[in-house]
Figure (cartoon, rainbow, N blue to C red):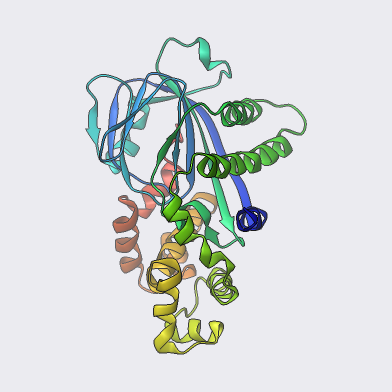
Length: 307
């Protein structure tokens, strides 16, 4: 457990948003994807997710690690099936944002959700790096209480709410990790994919990529950072992480591009250049291939649940 304590201590956690959502009519999103982690509690109704059409019922929690593409259906009954792009263009037909904090009294199907970021050494998305699938959390009153506290604070104007939300989101991440360990979920993935957090040369590579996201990140450069040969660095990186370094770099660049789209007014061309793509058309093609929607629509939506 000491290794997990070290990993938890190294995590930087950032709250992004929280909302209560009323489901107006059932909808299936065929290729749901978001770079951030999402956790939701289904207050009333049904949610189905994944290739096996797993069912979440009222009172249960669904955790979706960032970077996982999946099918998800909100609401009971016969759903309208849409692509991620089509849903974004018409989400007001299916979701309604609720201002009330007491959603338990609502007769309509509804859920509360939180988006958050959790990075190891401020550079690697923790849950995505573990390569674990979305999963349901049952019978965990600690996590339920934290979700309710965050959503309630977020809808309030009370002094200190931002500090409470920050602290509570950090607690939320810890409780999710504890739940995984206590229930012995994903034992093999955890054993395999958490070990590389202890390799100092790999941490140096992660940090260099983060600090030079728009620059030269060739294997030659990464090899000099890790003090290994250029021929070996790709094998070394993949051996420890399960992916080759250039795939990891593209994911980091696209994730940074999403953040810039959501938080700045920079043009698509400027953003592409800032994250390392000189060819804007190529950047746009790669962006749509990864997220299923054009970069401009990612900006307009801000996030999937922005209703």
